[in-house]
Image 1 (spheres, rainbow, N blue to C red):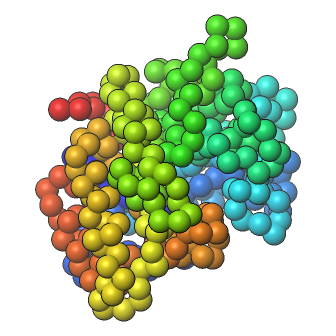
Image 2 (image 1 turned 120 degrees about the vertical axis):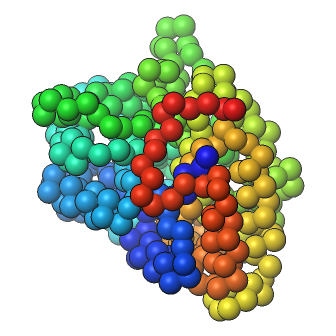
Length: 349
Protein backbone atom coordinates (compact mmCIF):
# COMPACT_ATOMS: atom_id res chain seq x y z
CA UNK A 1 0.00 0.00 0.00
CA UNK A 2 1.13 3.56 -0.76
CA UNK A 3 -0.03 6.73 0.98
CA UNK A 4 -0.83 9.61 -1.41
CA UNK A 5 0.06 13.12 -0.20
CA UNK A 6 0.39 16.74 -1.29
CA UNK A 7 3.11 19.29 -0.64
CA UNK A 8 3.49 22.50 1.33
CA UNK A 9 2.36 25.35 -0.93
CA UNK A 10 -0.73 26.95 0.60
CA UNK A 11 -1.79 28.71 -2.59
CA UNK A 12 -1.56 25.59 -4.73
CA UNK A 13 -2.96 22.90 -2.42
CA UNK A 14 -6.54 24.27 -2.30
CA UNK A 15 -6.57 24.54 -6.09
CA UNK A 16 -5.46 20.93 -6.48
CA UNK A 17 -7.97 19.71 -3.89
CA UNK A 18 -10.82 21.63 -5.54
CA UNK A 19 -9.96 20.29 -9.00
CA UNK A 20 -9.54 16.70 -7.77
CA UNK A 21 -12.82 16.91 -5.86
CA UNK A 22 -14.69 18.33 -8.86
CA UNK A 23 -13.35 15.47 -10.98
CA UNK A 24 -14.50 12.83 -8.51
CA UNK A 25 -11.30 12.32 -6.51
CA UNK A 26 -9.78 10.55 -4.69
CA UNK A 27 -8.20 13.11 -2.37
CA UNK A 28 -4.74 12.82 -0.77
CA UNK A 29 -4.13 11.15 2.58
CA UNK A 30 -1.64 13.65 4.01
CA UNK A 31 -0.43 17.25 3.62
CA UNK A 32 2.97 18.81 4.30
CA UNK A 33 3.53 21.81 6.58
CA UNK A 34 7.03 23.22 7.14
CA UNK A 35 7.96 24.90 10.42
CA UNK A 36 11.18 26.89 10.65
CA UNK A 37 13.17 26.97 13.89
CA UNK A 38 14.72 30.45 13.90
CA UNK A 39 17.97 31.45 15.60
CA UNK A 40 16.30 34.46 17.24
CA UNK A 41 12.56 34.73 17.18
CA UNK A 42 11.35 37.65 15.10
CA UNK A 43 8.71 38.13 12.39
CA UNK A 44 11.41 38.45 9.72
CA UNK A 45 12.90 35.08 10.56
CA UNK A 46 9.57 33.26 10.41
CA UNK A 47 9.72 31.61 13.83
CA UNK A 48 7.64 28.67 14.88
CA UNK A 49 4.12 29.95 15.37
CA UNK A 50 2.13 30.00 18.65
CA UNK A 51 0.60 26.73 19.80
CA UNK A 52 -2.95 27.80 18.88
CA UNK A 53 -1.90 28.68 15.32
CA UNK A 54 -0.20 25.31 14.81
CA UNK A 55 -3.11 23.46 16.38
CA UNK A 56 -5.64 25.25 14.17
CA UNK A 57 -3.65 24.30 11.08
CA UNK A 58 -3.52 20.65 12.17
CA UNK A 59 -7.27 20.68 12.77
CA UNK A 60 -7.92 22.16 9.32
CA UNK A 61 -5.98 19.31 7.70
CA UNK A 62 -7.78 16.78 9.86
CA UNK A 63 -11.19 18.22 8.94
CA UNK A 64 -10.32 17.57 5.30
CA UNK A 65 -9.41 13.97 6.07
CA UNK A 66 -5.69 14.63 5.64
CA UNK A 67 -3.03 13.48 8.09
CA UNK A 68 -0.49 16.24 8.85
CA UNK A 69 3.15 15.88 7.88
CA UNK A 70 5.21 18.40 9.84
CA UNK A 71 8.62 19.35 8.47
CA UNK A 72 10.91 20.96 11.07
CA UNK A 73 13.79 22.95 9.58
CA UNK A 74 16.96 24.17 11.32
CA UNK A 75 17.67 27.29 9.30
CA UNK A 76 16.93 30.97 9.02
CA UNK A 77 15.94 32.82 5.90
CA UNK A 78 17.60 36.07 4.83
CA UNK A 79 14.84 38.50 3.75
CA UNK A 80 13.55 38.98 1.15
CA UNK A 81 14.43 35.47 -0.04
CA UNK A 82 12.08 32.57 0.71
CA UNK A 83 14.36 29.85 -0.65
CA UNK A 84 16.40 27.35 1.36
CA UNK A 85 19.22 28.04 -1.08
CA UNK A 86 19.91 31.29 0.77
CA UNK A 87 19.37 30.00 4.29
CA UNK A 88 21.76 29.77 7.22
CA UNK A 89 21.64 26.56 9.20
CA UNK A 90 22.00 26.19 12.94
CA UNK A 91 21.58 22.47 13.60
CA UNK A 92 24.92 22.76 15.40
CA UNK A 93 23.38 25.24 17.87
CA UNK A 94 20.34 23.02 18.40
CA UNK A 95 22.72 20.12 19.07
CA UNK A 96 24.74 22.20 21.54
CA UNK A 97 21.62 23.45 23.33
CA UNK A 98 23.10 26.95 23.67
CA UNK A 99 20.05 28.94 22.55
CA UNK A 100 16.86 28.63 24.64
CA UNK A 101 14.81 29.97 21.72
CA UNK A 102 15.42 26.72 19.84
CA UNK A 103 14.05 24.51 22.56
CA UNK A 104 11.04 26.75 23.20
CA UNK A 105 10.10 26.82 19.53
CA UNK A 106 10.37 23.04 19.17
CA UNK A 107 8.41 22.48 22.37
CA UNK A 108 5.59 24.68 21.05
CA UNK A 109 5.34 22.42 18.03
CA UNK A 110 5.35 19.42 20.37
CA UNK A 111 2.66 20.97 22.58
CA UNK A 112 0.41 21.52 19.56
CA UNK A 113 0.96 17.95 18.36
CA UNK A 114 0.21 16.57 21.82
CA UNK A 115 -3.02 18.57 22.05
CA UNK A 116 -3.96 17.45 18.54
CA UNK A 117 -3.31 13.87 19.68
CA UNK A 118 -3.93 12.21 16.32
CA UNK A 119 -1.52 10.44 13.96
CA UNK A 120 1.10 12.71 12.36
CA UNK A 121 4.30 12.39 10.39
CA UNK A 122 7.22 14.48 11.65
CA UNK A 123 10.14 15.06 9.29
CA UNK A 124 13.07 16.47 11.25
CA UNK A 125 15.65 18.59 9.46
CA UNK A 126 14.41 18.71 5.84
CA UNK A 127 17.33 17.32 3.70
CA UNK A 128 20.26 16.62 5.97
CA UNK A 129 23.26 16.49 3.61
CA UNK A 130 22.52 18.01 0.22
CA UNK A 131 25.84 18.80 -1.47
CA UNK A 132 24.98 22.28 -2.82
CA UNK A 133 26.17 24.64 -0.11
CA UNK A 134 25.62 28.32 -0.90
CA UNK A 135 25.99 29.95 2.51
CA UNK A 136 28.68 29.52 3.61
CA UNK A 137 30.34 27.24 1.04
CA UNK A 138 32.05 24.30 2.69
CA UNK A 139 32.51 20.73 1.48
CA UNK A 140 31.26 19.18 4.71
CA UNK A 141 28.06 21.19 4.91
CA UNK A 142 24.73 20.61 3.22
CA UNK A 143 22.49 22.82 1.14
CA UNK A 144 21.32 24.58 4.28
CA UNK A 145 24.87 24.26 5.66
CA UNK A 146 23.90 21.38 7.94
CA UNK A 147 26.77 20.07 10.00
CA UNK A 148 27.95 16.45 9.99
CA UNK A 149 27.99 14.83 13.44
CA UNK A 150 25.91 17.72 14.84
CA UNK A 151 22.83 16.96 12.77
CA UNK A 152 22.08 13.54 14.36
CA UNK A 153 22.28 15.14 17.81
CA UNK A 154 19.95 17.97 16.78
CA UNK A 155 17.52 15.43 15.31
CA UNK A 156 17.48 13.35 18.51
CA UNK A 157 17.05 16.42 20.75
CA UNK A 158 14.17 17.70 18.63
CA UNK A 159 12.47 14.32 18.78
CA UNK A 160 12.86 14.17 22.56
CA UNK A 161 11.53 17.70 23.11
CA UNK A 162 8.38 16.73 21.21
CA UNK A 163 7.98 13.46 23.12
CA UNK A 164 8.34 15.40 26.38
CA UNK A 165 5.31 17.51 25.49
CA UNK A 166 3.18 14.40 25.05
CA UNK A 167 4.46 13.06 28.37
CA UNK A 168 3.43 16.28 30.16
CA UNK A 169 -0.16 15.60 29.08
CA UNK A 170 0.04 11.91 29.96
CA UNK A 171 -0.18 10.93 26.29
CA UNK A 172 1.72 8.54 24.04
CA UNK A 173 3.02 10.14 20.81
CA UNK A 174 1.13 9.16 17.67
CA UNK A 175 4.13 10.15 15.57
CA UNK A 176 6.02 8.50 12.72
CA UNK A 177 9.53 10.02 12.51
CA UNK A 178 11.11 10.68 9.09
CA UNK A 179 14.83 11.15 8.29
CA UNK A 180 15.29 12.56 4.77
CA UNK A 181 18.06 12.39 2.15
CA UNK A 182 18.12 14.23 -1.18
CA UNK A 183 18.81 12.13 -4.26
CA UNK A 184 21.69 14.26 -5.58
CA UNK A 185 23.45 14.40 -2.19
CA UNK A 186 26.57 12.46 -1.13
CA UNK A 187 26.03 8.85 -0.11
CA UNK A 188 27.75 9.11 3.28
CA UNK A 189 24.46 9.03 5.18
CA UNK A 190 25.26 5.91 7.24
CA UNK A 191 28.94 6.73 7.88
CA UNK A 192 30.13 6.47 11.47
CA UNK A 193 33.38 7.97 12.76
CA UNK A 194 35.03 5.98 15.58
CA UNK A 195 35.49 9.17 17.60
CA UNK A 196 32.80 11.59 16.43
CA UNK A 197 30.05 9.02 16.00
CA UNK A 198 27.31 8.97 13.32
CA UNK A 199 27.83 11.49 10.56
CA UNK A 200 24.15 11.92 9.64
CA UNK A 201 22.03 9.00 10.88
CA UNK A 202 20.56 9.45 14.37
CA UNK A 203 19.98 5.73 14.96
CA UNK A 204 17.46 2.98 14.33
CA UNK A 205 15.54 3.82 17.50
CA UNK A 206 15.10 7.44 16.35
CA UNK A 207 13.80 6.81 12.83
CA UNK A 208 10.59 5.15 11.60
CA UNK A 209 10.86 6.07 7.91
CA UNK A 210 13.78 6.65 5.54
CA UNK A 211 12.79 9.75 3.58
CA UNK A 212 14.03 10.68 0.13
CA UNK A 213 13.43 13.67 -2.17
CA UNK A 214 13.67 13.34 -5.94
CA UNK A 215 12.38 15.41 -8.85
CA UNK A 216 13.91 15.17 -12.34
CA UNK A 217 13.70 12.08 -14.56
CA UNK A 218 17.44 11.61 -14.08
CA UNK A 219 16.68 10.75 -10.45
CA UNK A 220 14.46 7.74 -11.15
CA UNK A 221 15.61 6.53 -14.59
CA UNK A 222 18.97 5.50 -16.00
CA UNK A 223 18.89 8.38 -18.47
CA UNK A 224 20.67 11.67 -17.92
CA UNK A 225 18.22 14.51 -17.49
CA UNK A 226 17.69 17.25 -20.05
CA UNK A 227 20.13 20.13 -19.57
CA UNK A 228 20.88 21.29 -16.94
CA UNK A 229 19.66 18.34 -14.82
CA UNK A 230 22.82 16.27 -15.21
CA UNK A 231 23.65 12.58 -14.91
CA UNK A 232 21.40 9.84 -13.60
CA UNK A 233 21.14 9.39 -9.84
CA UNK A 234 19.36 6.05 -10.16
CA UNK A 235 22.15 3.94 -8.68
CA UNK A 236 22.41 6.22 -5.64
CA UNK A 237 18.66 5.97 -5.08
CA UNK A 238 18.68 2.19 -5.41
CA UNK A 239 21.48 2.05 -2.83
CA UNK A 240 19.43 4.21 -0.47
CA UNK A 241 16.41 1.91 -0.87
CA UNK A 242 18.65 -1.04 -0.11
CA UNK A 243 19.89 0.73 3.02
CA UNK A 244 16.30 1.22 4.13
CA UNK A 245 15.64 -2.48 3.55
CA UNK A 246 18.69 -3.39 5.61
CA UNK A 247 17.27 -1.38 8.51
CA UNK A 248 13.72 -2.69 8.07
CA UNK A 249 12.42 0.84 7.37
CA UNK A 250 9.76 1.90 4.86
CA UNK A 251 10.67 4.70 2.44
CA UNK A 252 8.82 8.00 2.34
CA UNK A 253 9.11 10.04 -0.87
CA UNK A 254 8.98 13.23 1.15
CA UNK A 255 9.14 15.71 -1.74
CA UNK A 256 8.60 15.12 -5.44
CA UNK A 257 7.33 17.22 -8.33
CA UNK A 258 7.44 17.33 -12.11
CA UNK A 259 10.22 19.84 -12.79
CA UNK A 260 11.52 18.93 -16.27
CA UNK A 261 8.78 20.42 -18.47
CA UNK A 262 6.13 23.11 -17.93
CA UNK A 263 2.77 21.38 -17.48
CA UNK A 264 0.60 23.18 -20.06
CA UNK A 265 -2.50 25.06 -18.97
CA UNK A 266 -5.59 23.68 -20.67
CA UNK A 267 -7.56 20.59 -21.54
CA UNK A 268 -4.88 18.52 -23.28
CA UNK A 269 -1.30 17.54 -22.52
CA UNK A 270 0.21 19.23 -25.55
CA UNK A 271 3.75 18.96 -24.12
CA UNK A 272 3.46 15.17 -23.56
CA UNK A 273 4.39 15.63 -19.91
CA UNK A 274 2.47 12.54 -18.81
CA UNK A 275 4.50 10.12 -20.92
CA UNK A 276 7.79 11.96 -20.38
CA UNK A 277 7.69 12.32 -16.58
CA UNK A 278 4.65 10.73 -14.94
CA UNK A 279 4.84 7.34 -16.66
CA UNK A 280 8.45 6.60 -15.62
CA UNK A 281 7.82 8.14 -12.18
CA UNK A 282 4.89 5.80 -11.58
CA UNK A 283 6.83 2.85 -13.02
CA UNK A 284 9.63 3.42 -10.51
CA UNK A 285 7.17 3.82 -7.63
CA UNK A 286 5.32 0.62 -8.47
CA UNK A 287 8.56 -1.32 -9.04
CA UNK A 288 9.85 -0.56 -5.54
CA UNK A 289 7.44 -1.67 -2.79
CA UNK A 290 9.74 -0.16 -0.13
CA UNK A 291 8.27 3.24 -1.09
CA UNK A 292 5.14 3.39 1.02
CA UNK A 293 4.29 7.10 0.86
CA UNK A 294 4.82 10.19 -1.30
CA UNK A 295 4.07 13.91 -1.24
CA UNK A 296 3.61 15.45 -4.68
CA UNK A 297 4.21 19.22 -4.72
CA UNK A 298 1.98 21.26 -7.03
CA UNK A 299 3.92 24.44 -7.68
CA UNK A 300 5.15 26.73 -10.44
CA UNK A 301 8.87 26.52 -9.70
CA UNK A 302 9.55 29.51 -11.94
CA UNK A 303 8.27 31.56 -9.02
CA UNK A 304 10.86 30.27 -6.56
CA UNK A 305 11.24 27.55 -3.98
CA UNK A 306 13.78 25.53 -5.97
CA UNK A 307 16.61 25.83 -8.49
CA UNK A 308 15.99 28.46 -11.18
CA UNK A 309 15.93 25.81 -13.93
CA UNK A 310 12.86 24.00 -12.54
CA UNK A 311 9.58 24.22 -14.45
CA UNK A 312 5.84 24.42 -13.69
CA UNK A 313 4.64 21.21 -11.98
CA UNK A 314 1.01 22.13 -11.22
CA UNK A 315 -1.14 19.11 -12.15
CA UNK A 316 -4.40 20.95 -11.60
CA UNK A 317 -3.76 23.22 -14.59
CA UNK A 318 -4.21 20.39 -17.11
CA UNK A 319 -7.39 18.35 -17.45
CA UNK A 320 -5.79 15.42 -19.27
CA UNK A 321 -3.03 15.03 -16.69
CA UNK A 322 -5.55 15.26 -13.85
CA UNK A 323 -7.78 12.61 -15.45
CA UNK A 324 -4.85 10.22 -15.85
CA UNK A 325 -3.52 10.95 -12.37
CA UNK A 326 -6.85 10.37 -10.64
CA UNK A 327 -7.41 7.18 -12.63
CA UNK A 328 -4.04 5.92 -11.33
CA UNK A 329 -4.84 6.95 -7.77
CA UNK A 330 -8.10 4.96 -7.86
CA UNK A 331 -6.11 1.73 -8.12
CA UNK A 332 -6.29 -0.38 -4.95
CA UNK A 333 -2.64 0.02 -3.88
CA UNK A 334 -3.10 3.70 -2.94
CA UNK A 335 -4.51 5.03 0.35
CA UNK A 336 -6.29 8.39 0.46
CA UNK A 337 -8.07 10.94 2.66
CA UNK A 338 -9.58 9.49 5.81
CA UNK A 339 -7.08 6.63 6.14
CA UNK A 340 -4.66 7.51 8.92
CA UNK A 341 -2.35 4.51 8.67
CA UNK A 342 1.30 5.29 9.42
CA UNK A 343 2.39 1.80 8.29
CA UNK A 344 4.54 1.40 11.38
CA UNK A 345 4.06 -2.36 11.18
CA UNK A 346 6.02 -2.19 7.95
CA UNK A 347 6.82 -5.21 5.81
CA UNK A 348 8.68 -5.01 2.53
CA UNK A 349 6.69 -8.00 1.25
